Length: 444
Image (cartoon, rainbow, N blue to C red; front, top):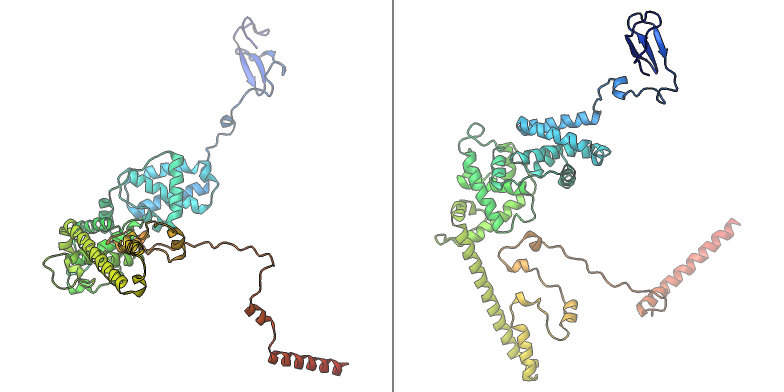
């Protein structure tokens, strides 16, 4: 509706404006207030004028209760870890972005709580704050596998990357959690955190050279290295008699159950290297190897090379001795005298190789004979250092062929005898029938 060229019939003024009253438009004179012209519903758009939802209901959208709890959980984890405010703000931002995604909006409360821990974890990684996924799993009291699955899903959804951290930073941050300074423990048990971190890093590197860290969780290995480093820096009677449980109670940290096994494995490696020290004459055992940790770590590369050479020489000596015994047995055996020279040569060629060549294919029916024989022993036991998955390999189940039962199989004599009653069983059965018939007649 246009107001151009119109005048008010009452006062003659041309000051006429459009006045939208609800859904009907009108032309009104500004001077006297008279209605000059009224519009019709047919002239207006269907449904009236367009009014946005925000203009009709001016209400701010409130976050849901689970989102508020998740944000509070992120803040709690950040305060427990004592991270900076920058990391906390970044974690809150990651949680809001991931929570609104369809992959996390309709999941269980447990996965939402794990999402809060994963957001803190990736924020710490992006700001070079040393932390491990095992620490987050411990804070959330959840399985590390579940936490890792949520972490991978979150990284894919947010399309972000977390840089890898240095193991030295992780060890230093872990060692600082141990309350073993002079302010917390007696002087004979106190140790500087920097010196302890340096010795623990060297032990972890030695564990990496000897395959101990392969496929293992990092925190138990770091705890085992910290415990051995603390004992070796000042191996007095007070430290040597403290077990791992008492050490964790003294340092006020939570003990990791696999750490005990890692300590035993580290001591075995240290004993193998300690025996190569030229100035050590007495036998090296796990009880006294802690006193030699400093010398072993100082010359560990040389000791590793010498230990491997010594092991190879011992293995060659065993092979030579085994071959000599087998040759002597072949000469004395009467069955070998009647055989031809060609058969003797072939037989000796099979016996000659060392045990590490037993897995090679042999001529003739070697494959069929190998299936019927016992499986080959674990090759990890023949080398000085081997991965844990090789030393403690799980035996694979051998699937036996399923026999088709047709009903025409022959019945063995022993099975037939089991169906035939013995004379004593026949007499007992007849007596039982007689007693049953007598009882039935008495009732009638």
